[in-house]
Length: 175
Image (cartoon, rainbow, N blue to C red):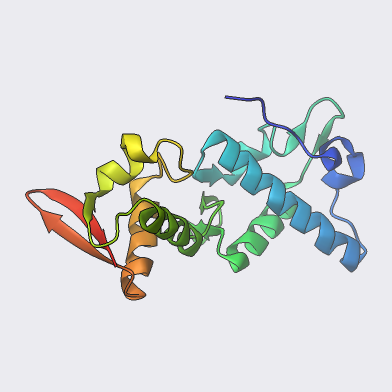
C-alpha cells in the first residue's frame, strides 16, 4: 500500500482552528470532509470513533503541534452526514460509519461493472462480487457486506437488480 498523501492544508496551522469568517469556514469544513473521506478510502476504514480519532494523525499533526478540536470534528462530520457520507451510530455523536462513496454511488459503480462485464441477466454471488478474481481490479473489491447490501438494495429499488437467496448463499441478478 502506498503512503497516504496529506493535502497542503494539513501543514498549515490555521487549518486546525475553525475559522470565524463563514465563507472561509465553509471551505475549511469542506476540505476537512475531503480529507476524512480520502484518508478512510486510502486505509479502507469504515468506522470512526470521535474520541480515538482526535488523537490520531488524521486530526492531530504532531509535526506542527496542531490538533483539530472535538467540536470542530463534530461539525465536519455533521456536514458529511448531510451529504450522506457518514451515519452516526449513536445520538451522542461519538461513533460513525464512514462511506467515502454513498451506497448509491457504490451501486452505480457495481452496475456499470456488471454491464461492462456481461453480467446482465446472470446471477453472481455477493462473495464473487467482493472477493472474486473478476473484481480484483474494481474499487468495490473487498467492500464490506453491510455497504454492499445497501448498494444492491438501491439497485433493486431502481429495477436494475434483484437480490436472490439460494442454497444458503446470497446473490444478485442484474437487469
